[in-house]
Amino acid sequence: HNDRVIAPSLLAADFSKIREETSRAINAGADWLHMDVMDGHFVDNISFGPAVIQAVHETNDIFLDTHLMISRPDHYLDRFLAAGSDLITVHVEAEHDVAETLERIRKAGRLAGLALNPATPIEDIKPFLDQIDLLLCMTVVPGFGGQAFMPEVLPKIEAAAAWREKAGLGFHIEVDGGIDAKTASRCYDAGANVMVAGSSTFKAPDMAAAIRDIRSA
Ligand code: DX5
Ligand code: ZN
Image (cartoon, rainbow, N blue to C red; front, side, top):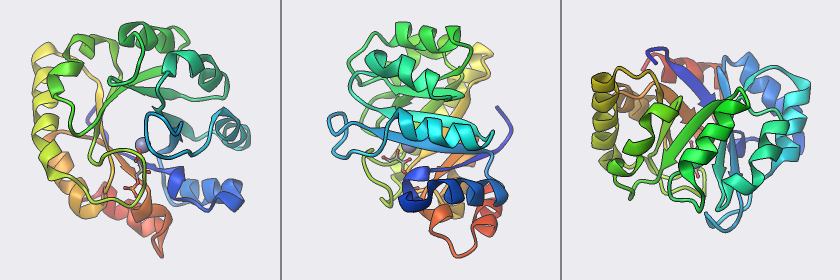
């Protein structure tokens, strides 16, 4: 969990050429590709589903970090596994048996992530710490790219990193929302190591430089 991982979010890509956009991210140095799935119910936006993830999976080998912003992750889980997700993150606030969903992801041989919204207390994820490979601390209210980073989330990252240390666990801590080189630096300091970045990478004039700057922030 000490390695820095940069995960551009496909949500900020040009959807009329997803294959080229994926290659652009890979060539620019992306470690993972972050796939934002929104159902119009858990969040106030609709993005894409398993078919798009499968299309990306079939054209290259990049690690697919699927972020399910959907109300019933348990109901759709098998489809996102079959589509080729390497890691699936579900929200603690969604309507499902969280422990059971996490267990299903790991049993399928993939990495399991658990996300929490900015307003959700960090205590809510504590029962699941030994079941996760990644903790996603949302640094915006999920639903849209291009929002401003919320620094009030930083203490939760620090608390999670301290719990991890104390329990001798090795899960990644990922941040998502408003991440650029400047905010990434604050997140690294707090204990996060996986940076999701949409606007600051895909919409940058030089994507490789943008990824480099976030990595070395
Ligand atoms: C927010 C999504 C994010 C989003 C990040 O609902 O989960 O992954 O795409 O976009 P930026 O980096 O533009 O804030
Ligand atoms: Zn996301």
